[in-house]
Length: 200
Image (cartoon, rainbow, N blue to C red; front, side, top):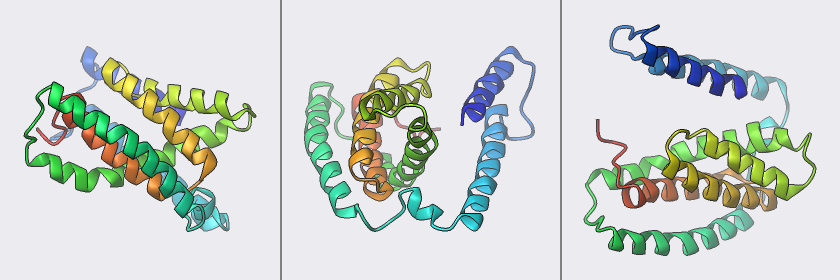
């Protein structure tokens, strides 16, 4: 995970300095992302094929679903009204049609991000950090740093990272966590930040 993040930073830096350029229609960061995605897919497939019960251990399971849904529901019930109210104050309405498309597809990305955050980061930190709260804070901080240098997004991801990591500690199920991530991520982009991630 750290190597992937470092590779992304190096690739972006080299591209900005003009040391590497686009290859056909693909920019340097897109090429790196595709290569990293392929490498991670192969690694995860290897783990699933060689370690019995690996998928369940990663949180793709049916147990803890009810409790995880309940905890994520409470988080959404607190966060969504605040975001919608902030949208009124910031005059973010009406939203473009792309908002509804993002709301429908972002949970897929939310599931992938929570899988990486809770398994590749939080779980691995548990080997060195036995306390839940220090582990939660560090996990959220690393999640925030991954969104450098976008300070508003870093703040939002730090807050959400704390909540999501705490919920996963209590109910280790990726499904409701990823769905909540998708909903809040969509609202954060369109309403708090005033950005349309589907605009090219």
